[in-house]
Structures are given as structure tokens and as C-alpha cells.
Length: 292
Image (tube, rainbow, N blue to C red; front, top):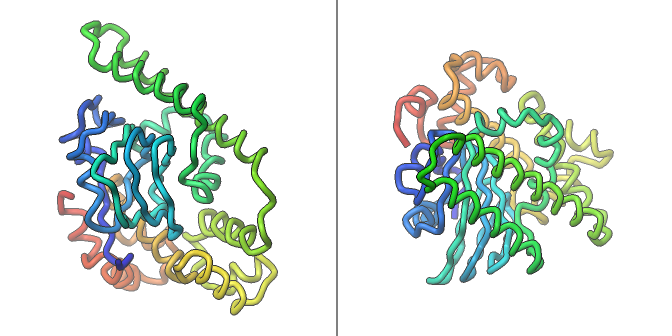
């Protein structure tokens, strides 16, 4: 399956068929199969954040170019930087999912929350203990009950507070996993450091040599490790990060194409447009106009 043509899902598109939705900032899908069907045909990314818990069935997908197994009790978190390639699923696969827009996340105003991004990049899927699974399901149930409640006064504020608490609980789970994790191999550590560097520098640094120098290895060695461990070349990682950012800015801002090209350190807007078209099949102008 090719990563070059990536479908990007907007929160509004998901909201139109989800079980529950509130405004445009976040969407709750209580296992609606129509929502799941959206994500089965081609590589995709989410314009926002998706937090899913598998409640039945099983599946397999490449997430961030690493193959992941999904089964009951799997916590799955997607962010725009992660490209997902569906591989297979059972007929009874069911996920409870909450989708957040960038606006919703920014309203939290917890700067330290963004530090979890690198952890998600390294570990987008994890198996929950029965206690953790039950606890998160209680959050989902409370949120769903509040969404459909007849009492409208303070409903939005209460629901958002519950969602914030859910996110903090997940942050806690990641912290526990980090403290319990087994020592990584040298190459696994190198891949994780590379992913962090990509996230921090892809806008300005597009050359393999920058990442190799920063990691104190040769270009050839880094290219070999990243290709073998992730199935994707370094240039492929950089291109996917650039394309994801460009898509997000084209859809969620009124920045000019020239400005986006400048932010991504292209020497000209024409080179940026060529790159974008190569990886999406559309010019930035056409992508901005279409409704996904």
C-alpha cells in the first residue's frame, strides 16, 4: 500500500456520521461502524487528535510506519504526524473514539501536554490492564451520558472538564508505561531520537545530513537503520511531516501559499507546490478548495 496519496479526515467530516457530536471542537463515536468504515480503504491521517479504546474484535495497521496489533483493551492515539495504513480487521472490531480538533486541544492551555507528543509518536498503541480499561470506559460512559442529557445548563463545560480529565488520565498511563518499560536496543533508541528530531525540526531541516549529525552517526548508517526499523526512508519521513503540516495549515488557516512555503523553508512557493502535488496529487490551491 502506497503512502504517497494520503486521505486526510477533518473533524467536521467525522462529526456528520458519528453517534454523538458537540459543536466542531470534539466528536464522540460510540462504536459507529460507519465511522470505522471511513478509515479502512487507504492510508490516512487525522486533522486533530483521536483517542480510541478497542472494546471488541481485533485488527492490524501500520501506524507511523510500524505495524501495530489492535485487540480488546488496546488504547490507540492518533495525531496529525502519524500516518495510518490499514492492514486487516475482524468483523466484530469495535472502537470507542473521541476526536479532538486543534482548537479544542489549544484551549487546554497546558503547555506540558504537548510533551506527550513524542511519546505518542513512539508508542501510539498500548495494551491496557483490566483496571485501566475499566477506568477509561467509565470516563467514556460519563461523557456519553452527559452528551445526551436533557439538562443543558453547564452541559458543555462539564463535558469538556470530563474530557480534560480523561486526557490527563491517559498522560498518567503513559508516565507509568515509561517507568516500567524495558531497556531499548541501541537502534530502537536511535529511531525514537530520530522521530523526536523530525517532530522538532522538519519545518526547517530537510537534509539527511542534519539528522545524522545531530545523532552523531553517518548518513548511510542512519538511513539504513530508519529504513529497516520503520520501512520508510528518512526523506519519506520528512516529506510526510511536511505534507501533514501543509494540509493542516491549508485547511485551518488563511495563510497564503507563499507563507506556508516560507514556514516550511522552501526556497520558492513553486518548489513547495511541486512537493505538495507529488505527495497528494493536488496543488495546494486545489486542496484548499475541495471539501474532504
